[in-house]
Image 1 (cartoon, rainbow, N blue to C red):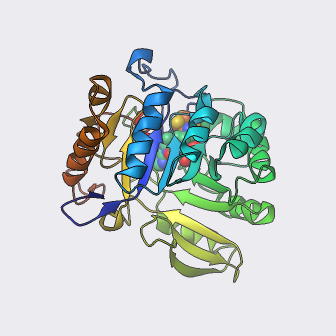
Image 2: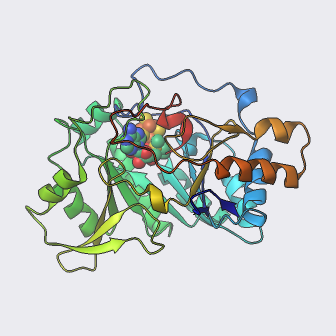
Length: 329
Ligand code: SAM
Ligand code: SF4
């Protein structure tokens, strides 16, 4: 098991497959992009599968989420999914993507064994999308969302981050669209993980703001947090159901006490938390012929040191050196 000193057990593994991206969301990356990880530093497909194998067979991981950067940019994605699907026990597998390219790949990913996807959709307005992501690709994202549902990568969740002065008036519109098209909508509070360090606590749109805005158009009934109790989205039934909406309030209502996550970066570092300032190197162990037992021991030891909380709302909070796109959101 991956247990820490606060008796939390990690059963959910987030794997970043690349730090590269074809969008430049203002809350994530600067316009000019970032200095990407060098190819030799990235884990190979086989190294990724080996680490997931150890996590699943030895460390009690039950679910794997592929992310990035943009995971659809990883050429070997379908092959990685296929190999992970063949593991025993087979973990639940999902993917967080900006949706660009999903139209082309959704069916193959489903066939390879992917269970479901989360697609980021911050706006229904193409012009706002272009301002927010600095790319004119809104149509591709919507097509990707349609393709995901058609391929059976369900339930498809749509993730939205609201930014002041850009799309903060769109919450009800996004929810109406998600209900109409049968997507599960999750709003995520903007977190201090942008490479430019532009996040401001005072300016951010809070869960409270989002709920107030949604209630101008919908009746929301609190449903409690998602099944396992440890998933971060607090959920509300929309107009009595069956659809629901979730809000992931990492800043204003942190869920660290129930966290069940461990993270692996594209260059083979274990992170105990999105906001951790320390990492533990597994790549070095992999490349110096360490046994599975030794790698599992290093991973366990890293998780044992997991901090109680991220302290986002604390004035002494210091943003981690690695931005969201290189950690894997
Ligand atoms: N590129 C993929 C995507 O956008 O879905 C996967 C990686 S992205 C880092 C994962 C999620 O993190 C996305 O839903 C994105 O909106 C969210 N995200 C990125 N930066 C964020 C920030 N500063 N605060 C909150 N969420 C953020
Ligand atoms: Fe790319 Fe996702 Fe970051 Fe947007 S949030 S720039 S899509 S990694």
